[in-house]
Every structure is written in C-alpha cells, then in structure tokens.
Image (cartoon, rainbow, N blue to C red; front, side, top):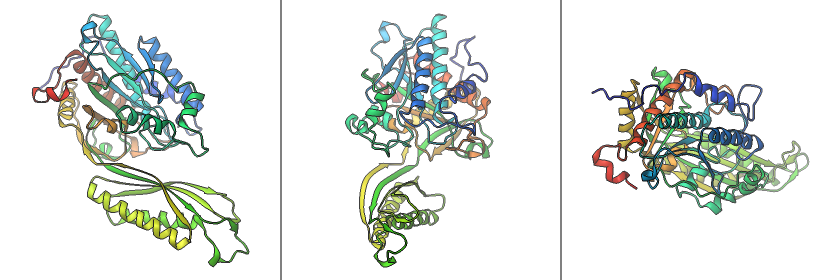
Length: 436
C-alpha cells in the first residue's frame, strides 16, 4: 500500500538547506581541520545558542530556556483548542566533543528548526494544525565537559534531578550552573510539557547504512551502556631514587585497567565494546610518580546480561589493578543505560511516513547514545539515522552528504505534518497509550 504524503503542495525543504545550516553553525568553535570544539557551556556553545535563539525568534517561535539550560523554540501552530495538547518535539544538541566533526547533534537541531519554519509557512497559508511544534537543543548531550552524558534531556524526562545535574563539575571544578550562568543560559523559564511524541534526526556514526547502500535508518533498539568514573590515589615520589618496590603509582593502576578493560571486549567480539577514553593525571610530570589519576571507563552491549557480567569483571579488574599498584581506589560515579526497544508503533508510523515520502528505510540498532534514548519509556520516541561517510564520528573528518541530510529531514517533515495536524495520528490500538 502506498501512503499519500501529508505535506501540502508548495511546502518543501530547499535542497542543500540543512547542510548549509550545519556549515553555518560550524563557525562557532571552528577547528583548522574543519571540525568544531564546542564543549557544553563554553563561550563557543554560548555563541551557537545565541545564533539558534536569533533564528528561532526570526521564525516566530516562542523562546524558552529552562533551569538546566535546555533551549526550546515553540512554534504556535494550533488555535486555542490545541493549547492544552502536548506539542510534537524534535531536536538534538549543539555541544560537541573537544575535537569534533560539524555534523553530530547539530544536524538534528537545524533540521528541527527548518521543519518548524516549514510548518509555520503552511500555517500562514491556511493549513490547520491540532498541535504545536517544539525545537529542542539539549544541554550536555556529549558528556565531554560535564558528566554524565544526556544530562539536559535526562533532567527533562526525570532521569536526573535538577540539583544533581547543576552541581556536576568539569575537570577544573567549575559547576555546570556556573558555566551556564557565564554564557547567559542558566534559564528560569518553565520547560514545555512532555511532548506528544519526540523525534530526532542524527548521523549514524557508524558504517551500517553506507555498507548496505541505504539512505535512511530507523532505530529499533539501543545498546546498553555502563560508565564508571573512579579514582586511584597513591603517593607522589621522585622517579629516580625512589625504589620500585616502594612506589605507589596511581598511573600504573590506570595502565593495568586500560589493558584489562580492552581485553574484556576481545572475548565478546561484536557483543561488547569497551574503552577508557579519559584519564586525568596528577601531577603529570615526567619525573614524578603519579599520586592521583581519575579514569573513566565504559562498556556497551546489546545484551543486558553480557553488560552486567562485563561490568562486574571490569570492576574486579579495577580493584585488582589498585591492589597490584598499592594504591587506594574510590568509585566516584556510575551510570547504567539498559538496552531497550524503541516503541514499535512509532517505528511503524515512521515507516509509513517513509513510504509516503518514497524513501526506503532500514531497521537498525544504535550503539551510540542520543538524547532520544532519554525519552524511551517516558513518551513515544523515534530516532532516524542518515549515513556517516566512512563511519567516521567524533572526529574532525566526520561528514554526511547533503542529499542524505535532505532525505532525513524530508522524512521528519512528513512525520511532523501528520503528528501536528491530527489529534491521534497513530493506529487505534495505541491511541490510549499516547493521549496526554
């Protein structure tokens, strides 16, 4: 069965527009290799947020900044009868890793913005809507400066408390609340109500779509992830005269941990990914035995049982590394995200939208974490992928073809018209689940 498009004649996303917006935002925190450095609540992040605010205001959206710094642009599409209905929401994040590509979360934010503009254009032409539309830029998705990741969307959905999130500190001891205040985004506005449906467009950050020669991926499940922040504390000493047997080397414990955590994945090929991506060494001098090392390890798996087993093995290896190096160990923080299915009725709905848009789609999993995962089990949620060239991600060379960006945005434009124009756009068997 061929589904008919809900997009009115004359309403379209200009080819190349999404890519042009992605490139425009790359001016905030630019790097010589073409990527960006836009850590959460940095001056570059503030400048990007300012630009988004200006674009949203010019487009006629109502601007809200909540107390965790989440940035919302609410497009008022419905009449008074729709004011009490929860909006449709799309978005992603503008913060980045320290040396990142220009696509990542920016794609989802600018695509949502452009979709909002097209909906407003249709409204001005007399198209009727039952729901409003909201663009979201979530604070600290990356977890590169403040931990944990998915912080702003996690506060919005109740995964994290506001107080704990605002008290999160970077490696210099600066609180998130202080950093947001410094760039003018420690907000006071009430957040919009929980959405009727949350959808997100993102680059795949892997090679699956490209290898299959597919343009659109519909995420059906996420991998689980366990993240451990821990501290080794030994004793500072001279690397020359101090006898080896007397050394309490915190960096040695970290080195043993890095190797052991990697070995866990080698025993579960394709079922377990592990890494130690962050260490902070003190005093970090070539001729001083390190007395303090902060380490962050993570494990990812599509199978929760494997993840639990691997985390237990990792914690045992960390304890053993501390004992062998004769240092003290403190587990500073732990987060766990279980493997979960995306709502099947939303995947089905997006499949229908893809058929209406004449776009073939490929079901797939996400190994990476995205803000959409904060909404699973809370609100109807969908995540759409477009290819990453060569599977490159979290790297300045990260890229997605403009035509692929257009295809993903066009699919979500179709979804937006259906979701905003109807009070119950999903099939009848799930309507009760979706009503506010």
